[in-house]
Length: 137
Image (cartoon, one colour):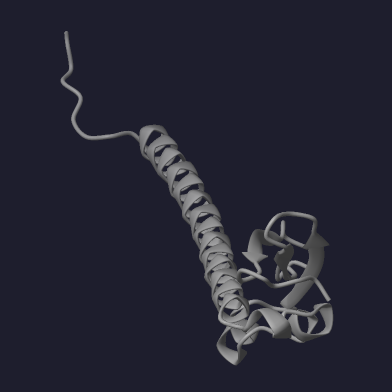
């Protein structure tokens, strides 16, 4: 005699709940990792925008005011200092022998990851050229 079986057994139900718990744990870990990566990308974008802003401020200076001391005094804006924990801008200027005379300016922004790991810095370089007849100091 064949008996028709209806419903789930207790073992089948326990296995189903176990599989669902594993899937939920994997999904939560993936979401957590994705959120952390998104925040890291946002910090990097903020640093890149701030480096571009520093470059624009330096490029707006007259040739005579482009000195190592003047560009080294450039700092991060307050909003960026709040966004990038431990953020520091390092700006350097080096004369370049060229015709017309030029100066190479390097802007590097570093910050510390919230887990106390230093993230890769954002760095921009550009060259400023003297107006016709300008000379290096």
